[in-house]
Image (cartoon, rainbow, N blue to C red):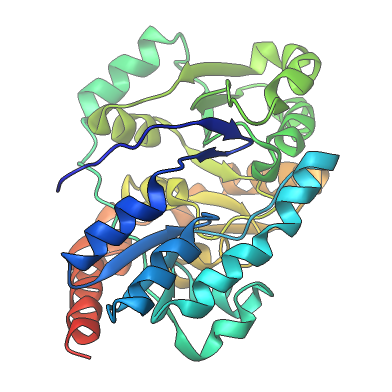
Length: 324
């Protein structure tokens, strides 16, 4: 893999402006057999358009529709997704992580004739059980039932809904404690800052671990949790729940397109009504009360979300596209 970094002239919300991108893309695409782009990305049209001009096939892996919080600027960005649709229109083929998400996305509907689904290739080492026990002791959480959550602290992830559910959960069982892994400082969205009062109200029930960059530490974190929760408003196919399942930890997930598929195909969790703190609290307490019913062995989850099978599916697709 060769990484080419281009100068950034300015930043706009989640994206950056790189004036030299079209020219660099043109030169690179000339020298390659196929173009693979990951969206959402407004510049996708440059890549697929140039590929079309040069007679090269292009594959788009769509990571999820653009979902922005309310606001004037964010509204402009949301409407600007039409520019991205032109890029997908010019693409040879489009892949999404979840067939369920592809079926229910209005943005992807015009491309249904060239839309496929491949689970993302997720690889996670086996948990180190001695380290998991040590981690729990060092955090002072021995005797606690632990519920994990992770990801970018942005509105679409629904962490505000979880924060409203936490008092309901702890009221029923004071031994339940919550662990968060991830970054709270998201440059393009000040969601965490808005939630500080709510976080402080729940401070005694939450331990913030920060961003876990080491894969082994991440696997140990998932295994440390008795359950993992995904309270998202929208989510194409959250990789955190697959990582949790690969560590043997069952999940409580909102019943929304894409995010619900992992539970549906494995039975390794519960689905709850989205944007409903009471329903989320019910799901968490029910999960912990009946955990054995949902906690499959990590090998069973790996059989569904097989890393090698996902890589082979991409390889076969790319090979077919190059051969025309």
